[in-house]
Image 1: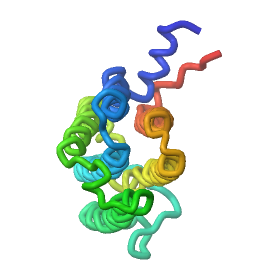
Image 2 (image 1 turned 30 degrees about the vertical axis):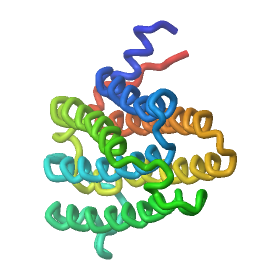
Image 3 (image 1 turned 135 degrees about the vertical axis):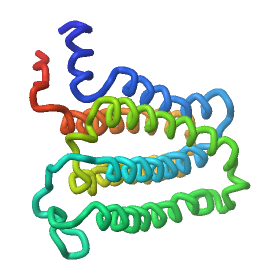
Length: 228
């Protein structure tokens, strides 16, 4: 195995620049906790906001999708997705994903009180820090949307129906990661170590799902290089 073959494997699923942006953006919260005194609760809120950003970009993807691929066995409003037009799929996704996101947000925003008995502001939750980190992660998703989806031509191969449920796998995994991380941090009090583990897990999840998503959207003529 050599570095050229590793890079070739990554390029099947995404551009190297998009992968680098994803990793660097995910390191920002860890750097903030270790060197700038960011509260761990800030990080959990940022991850929740990031899921909202993912939903926004998925709406953009659905709106610009030109492919004709159709998922099987999936329904929207009791109708097969294959029979549902883009103008109906997008509002359905916004409402369904949005409700899921809001409910999870209520849980995340009440975590400081559950573990410390203090409201968010008293637990070190800083809106400016949250906004900065969320913007950095949003830029990472923007780079992927532009470079892979638009510039890479994925919008020509993906359909709105295929994208309808695309973010949910990532959403569910990250929800569990956030919850388990919050429990570990709240019960042990070891914020730096727990955040380091949480960030490492999130990077691995993000990277794996990111590459898998873009491999599915890659042209059939680009086979996956086999690594020994």
